[in-house]
Amino acid sequence: MYVLEAEYMGYIVPAYGFFVLSTLGGLGRYGRLAIPVTQLKRYKQYGLGVFLIGVFFDLISGVLPGTLGFFAFLASNFKFVGAIVLFFSNDPRLRNIFYLALGYLFLSALRQAMFHDLVLWSVFFYMFWALKHQPSKSQIYLTILIGVLSLSTLQTIKAAYRMQVWQGYGGNKLELFADLALDALFQDNRNAEQLSGTENNVRLNQGWIISAIMDEIPARTPFIGGETIGQAISASILPRFLNPNKTRAGGRENFRRFTGLDISQGTSMGISIVGEAYGNYNVFGGILFMGAWGFFLARFWRFLLKNAGQNLLLIAFLPLIFLQVVKAETELVVVLNHMVKASIVVFGFFWAARNILNWKV
Image (cartoon, rainbow, N blue to C red):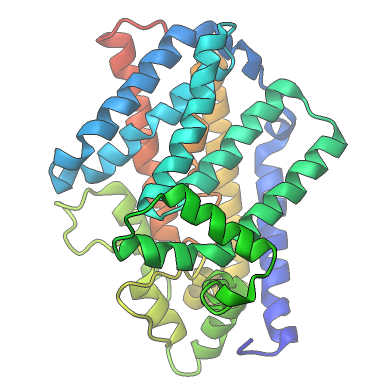
């Protein structure tokens, strides 16, 4: 930690507390609204269509121009949305697509040595699985335990696995992954240095990063005064060709600016929204901003649920819209840009489905 615990906690605790209270207050009765997700079974034919659209964009994304890259990314994730819808189908063959999508996620993660999508979509898939099957508390606790163990193991081995794959490993990647996982679980000293997760743990330690921001600002760098907040809003509204100076994802620009620490070009670290709020507005202003952000998310959630009341299929798209929102380390420009652009794509899809494909949605 770069600052004293009392200074750090004096900001973080009230900031997150106000965020939670504002979110719950903004939700109102929608925070307890029962969503009839099991009725997604009525949309199985549409679920298959959404799934195939995602597969199509997954196949052609590599040949599309860079300007369509983000759209292709969003559209390719439709395959997971479709898999969620099909999971509620009464047809066991269609339900199997849900599990095939999970398998695809895992194999894709092994091929690319990137596990971000696997972790996020696995959590979302489990949420819908739990809504359908209503597991007991003991089953939920067991799932949490398995999840923590799996994530800890993955965090330990992913750097070693990634290094070998990116250096042209030609063997069986599943076997390599399994061997590294077993070594990590049973503390094989032969690979202790290679499997060290220290560097990755530093990257994920938001307390360390936020304390670095509080140490840097305002001692050596003045408060930003809302500049990055304004940039995030404009970036979420304007496409890159209208905003050529748009901040790029990855967190490097803001990380260096807010913490005063240098990171290599190939490394990405996020300052988080709560860290960004402090860097822009100081302690009291940062707390107020977190409250405003929580209230905004709550009202946006209410807007989506109101629309889902008229079109239940929208429920399956919520993970895609909130894919970046659920991440603690991501800064505002990434979160807001994804949420706004994903919403435009989703509602644009529904318009096209109704008016071009004649879907009853």
